[in-house]
Amino acid sequence: MMGRRDKQGRAEAEAEARAAAGEGAEGAGHTPGDEALEIEDPLEALQRERDELDSKYRRALADFQNYQRRATQNEREARLSGVRSVVEPVVHVVDHFDLALQLDPEKTSAEQVLGGVRVIRDELFKVLQSHGVSVIQPEIGEAFTPGRHEAVMQHAAEGVAGGGVSMVMQAGYAIGDRVLRPAKVAVAPADESDAGDMGGEG
Image (cartoon, rainbow, N blue to C red):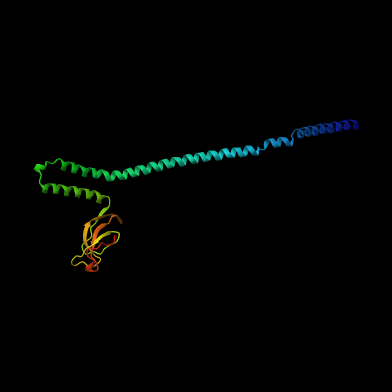
């Protein structure tokens, strides 16, 4: 009985020894170098990051260039649309001129010609008004307003105090609050002895 137990104990010890030896062999095959192979090369990581950034930059640049092209095109179309809105009504005014030029001079009186000119002038002014243009037409005696009025001379006028508008030589025009052209006027001098002298421009 004791001999069998000794043999069985030795067999179990040998089996454990063989199992331990096998685990040691497996552990010996897994070297630190294998773990290093699993870690990405820092240079390759930097190159990949560079490529990704370069790709993002190229996409952003392409998007910006497309935006610039669209913005330029939209600006061009907006400008063309603005010009078109002004030119189209003016073309109709030109049609009136063409009709007037087709009249027979021998059968047309001066009064008819003047009437035609007035019609064309009124038609053109309607076009200007439709775009917010207004006339600057000072009243005689009105106070001189720099910016809206341009004084080209001094001229005394009965009932007009010094510094007031005494004569209107040319109407001005404005669009909204912005003056396109000031009205050219004469201003009454503060002293009658200064009448006829040139005044300062507004």
